[in-house]
Image: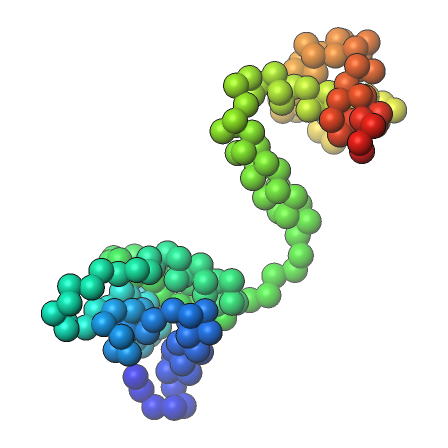
Length: 191
């Protein structure tokens, strides 16, 4: 590494401390571990802190126990900006991640995507299940299924949702009351 006033050397020390704090091995201390180096290796040959998997040739044939993508995720969770190296099997720590303002739309999108992935993996009739869930959400509102498309009336997305709901609860929401007692509905009994 370089002198103590080099910001990249300081960043490398911070990265090393974060990895130690997470209980990860640093190359050179053990037979294998995460190698940390300051180099002119960035996409545009700029100075960066590199993370590589390093082994010490001690004849043990020790296999890596840590995958670099997991190491990168550990660092991201600790506030570092980490990118995959454009050429090799390495990662670049570009600095501390900038604090982003809270974005509720992104947060609930992540929650919904995670929930839908679980359902897709277990539900045999995903389209029917999804139609029922949307109908249940619509049953929570006085305006019924129209609430789900009110934000973008006339858009192709709203048109598809309206047709899906019409096929599930009827053109005029005549079967919507049935979904009010479904799990999560306004008369669920557990909600």
